Image (tube, rainbow, N blue to C red; front, side, top):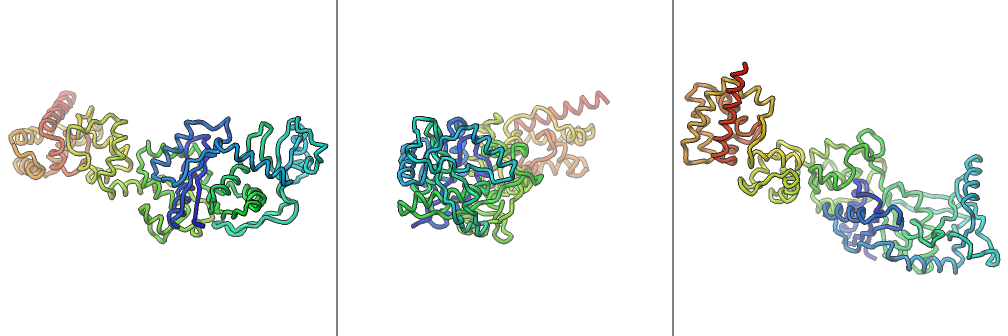
Length: 476
């Protein structure tokens, strides 16, 4: 049987980074073995599941580029199948109706807590005869968990895990209204979809022994094989505590909004718990080729935003400029930066990526190439637009206005000639000119910057800088 993995989020919120890492590991394991990757939406919690959350999951997966081979399947469209399996278990004596009231169960729980016993159902209705079962009364359906022996499974990440059946109670598989429960639907789906590897967060470890018993009860009767399990340790925040909203952006699409490339986020997530020597940067194909579940760390990993920022910058610098622009355009639109008239954005990427960490910063940083800035950076203006800069700016403007060859090489020569004529260093001309045309003190090579901004805008902005210097002189 070929490998088949599944990512099965509940649509009760956005796709968070922990879920995204699980999806990535499932995807990589399937692709490495030429298997299939299934997307399943576990939406049986009808009170909390929303269409908006479903769309957020689909959007997140699409943005990350984790395309599924099957699905998306929706559990709410499989209720007939769950009912069929439930009836099968009842008929085979592997499940039973439970009529215990909420009050009885609450009292039972309190007594177990007081006596420091395992919390769980005591099997009160387990052996009722048909005559003692009044199905017209409110009831749930419980699975008959084995009473003896133990569940033993070899977790592909954590190693062998053994749990005594005496520690497990009879789980509800259908509520009073007939709707199926999580642990039951997961088992039916994994068997029906022939999932070979269940890769999920280690918060599900406690569910696995219960699910294995159900798998044996259902799958054994249908001659279906039990999947292998791999439980991925949780992700911690920078402070060592479990990653949550208080740590900032935990939604996948929030990382998109904050200016991260999907390639960078995937690269960062794969390294949160897995490594291959000292290699830091992996293409998706390298991840597929090198990833192995047995190499995933058993200990939790801590999220490090500085490391993600570094990776994001590496990708902005190394990806083809056109690919970066595809993702940058969303941020340009959000910030109302119109690049239709001016230098091609692709030309700016190699020059500007060194100076920023995110696409959001990049969109803001290239704005001056397409429109006049509103005000000078205070620190840059204070340092470089002083009265002593007036003469260099005036002479540079005069020379710039008189040339026809508006190329970086010629423009650079103009700056050099201005400095020579005034018998000052290049910085005495270059820095005031840079601040004058960009509004700040940082930009690519000055000749290139002048060429890309364009002659009209350069002359206009030098005038603005000269006005600023005049006002500064008048107020001194």
